[in-house]
Image (cartoon, rainbow, N blue to C red; front, side, top):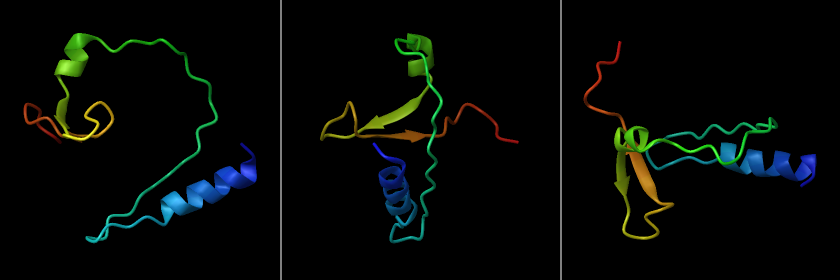
Length: 71
């Protein structure tokens, strides 16, 4: 995908606003990441995931864990 197209996509994403005023940040990462890296079952279990009825593998909310104190 050309740089010009990526810039256009990023601009569209950055213009996204919710009804309550939430703004979206988007950054292009050009680094290469290793494939096949697995997340442990313990790490996945520690996430506070709320899966949605439609496409639950892709459509979910991650909420802050309540077992940690934030400083």
